[in-house]
Image 1: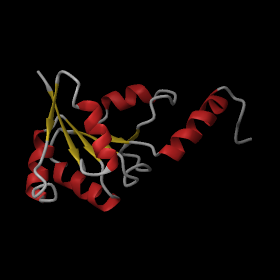
Image 2 (image 1 turned 90 degrees about the horizontal axis):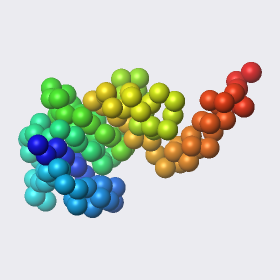
Image 3 (image 1 turned 120 degrees about the horizontal axis):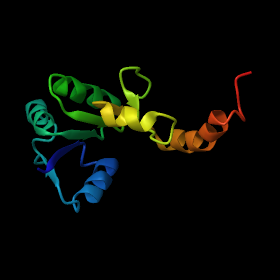
Image 4 (image 1 turned 30 degrees about the horizontal axis):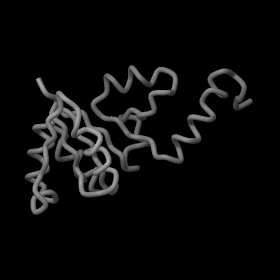
Length: 136
């Protein structure tokens, strides 16, 4: 059975890039909204409700709104904005960090790290995990 994926904010750069990467995969059904419906809360709610996975490629306030629209559903949400990155109820989506891969697999709410954070974490995490850097 195909996984249904909705990209809320597909018209922006991040959304377009995710769409381009996913459209050629077998086993994926991309849910799309017409241009005139993409900002309609009822249409977005329906798309979020019908998706197995939703990518939020939106400004922070719109991402928060999308989460509210989807809060009663079982959709796995991956937010590319900064809106949820520091919330303890969201998993930080950087699988290279120790024990993160399992947390990401199990979570329904994943905050995607930004490019600057990803670069910094990728460089520093091995040093911290191996005891080469510490708070002491």
